[in-house]
Length: 113
Length: 111
Figure 1 (cartoon, one colour):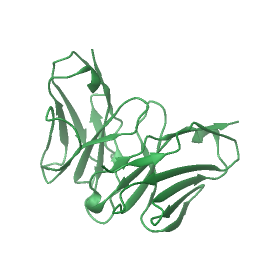
Figure 2 (cartoon, rainbow over the protein chains, first blue to last red):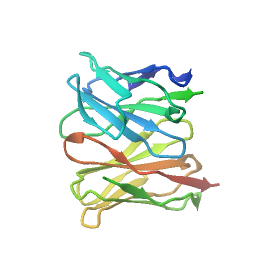
Figure 3 (cartoon, each protein chain N blue to C red):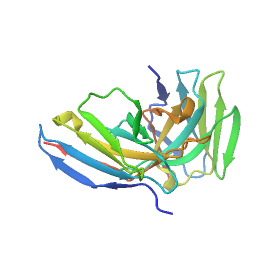
């Protein structure tokens, strides 16, 4: 049973550039959530996708956008990168229903220089 | 603004002891509660979920929930050095939306 996968593992970008991160959910899951985790902090909710639509969004600027594809995989796009965007970006998948356990992928470490 | 708070840590316990991790949350409408373990440089791993008041046991782990006090805890019995990690408390409301995580408590189990 394949777990949540993310790509790439690591990424180095320059301020002002754009980045796209990818996530494939765990088999049987239809919901994908994205989180940003700065060093020494808990994950911060960015947004959640279900049925190819953004269902809920956290307190992140419009520079952060996403997409969900018919196969439930998802992308996170960040435009106009800032130094403060350097963090571990986590994707979590879950199955909409009565149990809302989220399972995380290994994350993408983004460094903005 | 939903908030989740945890012991600031770090928490150090000797091997074989019971480690007690605490979490409080601000949103009374919260329905589901989770504990994740995160090793340094790795992603969070779900170790316990609890949805109703009382205790839930799974091996050496026991989660305790008290919705009236807006409090959830995790007990780790017979702590092992391999339990040394950061433990994250997560809370969400209806329909699985918008998990809110606490800042985490770093646990160190000393051999």
